[in-house]
Amino acid sequence: MPNIIDVSDLSYRYQEAGSRVLDHVTLSVKQGEWLAIIGHNGSGKSTLAKCLNGLIQPEQGNVVVSGYNTKDESAIWKIRRRVGMVFQNPDNQFVGATVRDDVAFGMENHGVAREEMLQRLDEALKLVKMEAYADQEPHRLSGGQKQRVALAGIVALQPLIVILDEATSMLDPEGRRDVLETMKLLNKQRGLTVLSITHDLDEAVHADRLIVMNEGKVIRQGTPAEIFQHAELLEEIGLDLPFAVKMERLLRQRGLEMTERPLTQEGLVNALW
Ligand code: ADP
Image 1 (cartoon, helix red, strand yellow):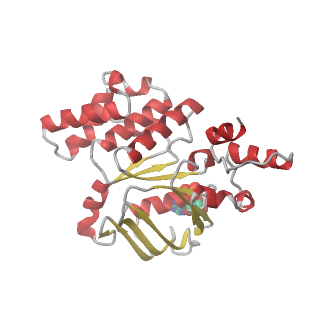
Image 2 (tube, helix red, strand yellow; image 1 turned 60 degrees about the horizontal axis):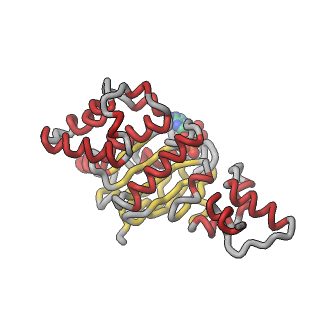
Image 3 (spheres, protein in one colour; image 1 turned 90 degrees about the horizontal axis):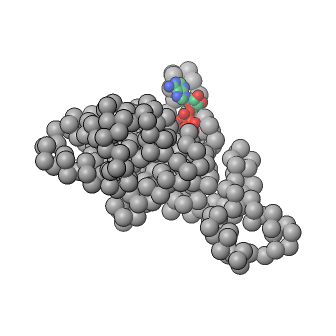
């Protein structure tokens, strides 16, 4: 698969005298990939996300999304159409009085014809399993349902890439699970490229590949199995290891050998039984 995002030697600082928040970041994302960017608070993840959809411009280096350089002002709207973003707080993302209005809002702004809009609306709500809530007021929904509606609004705009910036961090475990399932669906069934920015490593183990950030730098890249082989490094930079990795380590310490690295809770259960 070709690269859909290429970031090369990207540096950024918020004020001229301030320190670098992104420091020579180089990474690429393949079309259809699910990439998780992990790191503790303040490591530069959200700033990187803002660079990816052209909200802020690199101080140095280049960001190329779907063939367009974010420095090219004439391409900025093309980039924004291709990159959908879901943020942390589900309550800050609603504009419509009902779920249906809310999902339709973005399409109206993009000038989607009415018939096509209705079709995309139905499809998007079905995909996130919220069709039964179409006429409800968004603020009555649970956190997980709200994030799924936010995702429907983005899917309806037919982006190539969805960036979830800590989109599950304010949710309860059930909401997290629901949003995670929806992310899997978008990625595996729809072929959308998913970039999840998270400090929740239980979520990150589901990604195809992880990028570890610390103090504005990419300090490691690899599959979840490769990254969790160096669990000490993740602990050193203040990340809480996934439950299954902690359990596996505990079991090894007690002399119980795993035949394979489980990484996920389901994997752990399978390896034990
Ligand atoms: P993360 O998403 O990993 O928590 P951020 O990209 O939000 O990290 O922040 C990286 C650094 O940039 C932090 O030190 C943060 O305080 C600083 N920062 C973030 N946004 C701004 C801003 N708008 N103005 C000045 N500094 C900022």
